[in-house]
Image (cartoon, rainbow, N blue to C red):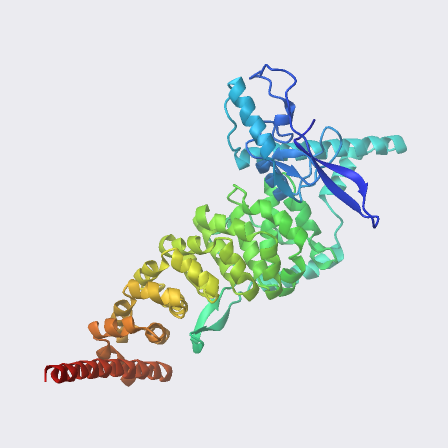
Length: 536
């Protein structure tokens, strides 16, 4: 018996198609004695070699520790089992029966219950297995070549290894390709787009990030020699070089390759599109979680560059990279957090990604980064939140996280106040956001900002008025709160000195407030008259 769940093969359906049937096996010990030193092999993960904490069944029927499966998927590795089979990690099912068996064995044998294995500990075991598998395959190939031709004096193993590590290049094209790229490297690019709050166009606001080439990056300490950038970037399989290099066990080679990818995609739009393939994204994922300071920041920065191409944004999210970026935003180095926030911001520009990014849990880390990150991290986090809150579901999620008080407090921070105001404008248009902002005394905060009229830039003035106007729509609470905060004086200044859109909104709010006052006055007069009539 190998696992409590086993998938039977070979059954054929009525149309000739093979069907997969899951047979359930329950492990029963053949002996009443439990040996603490020798657990049954069925309870041990074939990859990690320890008792399984969270056993799962894969598509081919074997049982593994969940962390082992995740590591193998991240590294793109399929181990060869003792029976010669390679497991399929496409789908996994929790193996509750085996977990119960493991806990029962531990209880009866007096052994300590298994703990969740450390990801990096499992990764080191898997990488060692990958190295041994690679060495054995090279040895087998070497033996085969020797048998076929015993007259060759050069070491076939060295020849085979050399071909594997140095794929053929089109050297005739390398010089022209590098000359073109070097010209690109001498320039930088950025673009701007206008943001819209409350369906009204505002002044141009810089929301589009440019490719990352921070001087603080580790690439400055280990630059690639220009002649070593692969010319394979011009062939039909442009990602081959990077995929091979990323999967090597030599960390230095990984670092050099990811720096090369970062450089190649810094300004070259065509390279971004042609290199962003599912194979390359899959090979890049392990480098995003690498603990080496020269690998991880450059990998995330390269991903930012790839995400700048519009056609790549959905590809990257569907490749399962968003969750890794969120984890990096939570616990990466300051440089890595900057790149992670920039990548999430870039991906959030695509409408098809907004809901998915919110569901994956990006809102809370972005909100936290607004208060604790570097200037670049706060900038990109604020703009990422702005684009994500253009979707109603993300507005509701952000409100449930208690964002109203946080955002209103951040409006006092001069460096990102204008960007945070964009998020407040988005929240104010929905009923949940309006209620939460009014509870957080948003009317008084916004009026306080507008009282410093001369110190505000035009976009902040207009967005502040737009947020007030959204809060005033259909809300009796707003009118009473505005009256207490003496909003009439501030709105009168807006009418006299504001832009066209701001003046129009301020006039509407003043008219609504005056109408409310008049209604209250009429109600009081009417009430007095009725009392007089009743007394008479």
